[in-house]
Image (tube, rainbow, N blue to C red; front, side, top):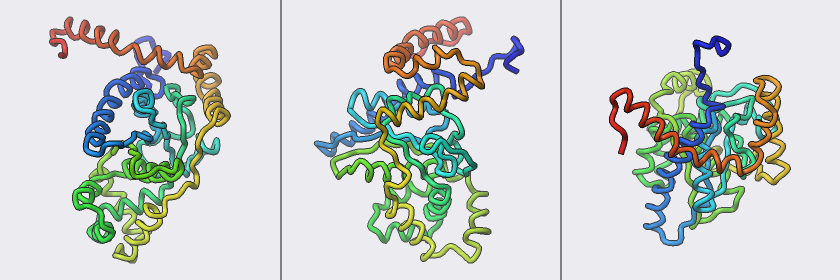
Length: 294
């Protein structure tokens, strides 16, 4: 399709507007969220931003939070396909998470932590969050009812980000004055068939209080620092280099265009493009009779 000049391919893994949009919009929204809580809790520090890498666009929000507030950026992947952690491969069930390659728009050399989360953690917590037995057990631990009402809406990728946030907090030895910002990227209503499959398979004998307690104890209370790597320069460059095979050898990206992304000057320049693109969008919409946005 790409070879036909009549087609224009939008590739979310290479589209820098994806990166810039999250840096400008998602990043500011999350910053406002943090500032709201910081006003209620003086001394609250924004310690980390945690997000799974699909196209990696959302990770760009962390770059604004890092520049403005010093937050470290944790990129999350499925443990069954541990590309960043172990240069690995495989199949996984956490929808929305990319695998087997490093997106071209992932600013790897500004990433601080990589976290692997298992299918079993997301699947079993999905049952706990989506059943009365699971929510009753969580309530018995003293969790606020407002939080419990929220958990019932979390899909598998949202749960993945929550588990990764706990693992990040333990890896970085964070305390009560440290805030982590993450994103609930999907809703539980998408996964009715997944819960039916779990009920017919893993929990064929039923999902009751003991199964709920086991899921929460293992995957929330027991979330630890296994399969978590705090990146140094060597680790960042290892992951950066891994992308060479996808983008230069397979996709034909010019090596100079690939390599320039290693330095932060490139990304800071890309971040300045939003006003120019906004003006171009307004001009295009004007020709189409659409009024400019305020």
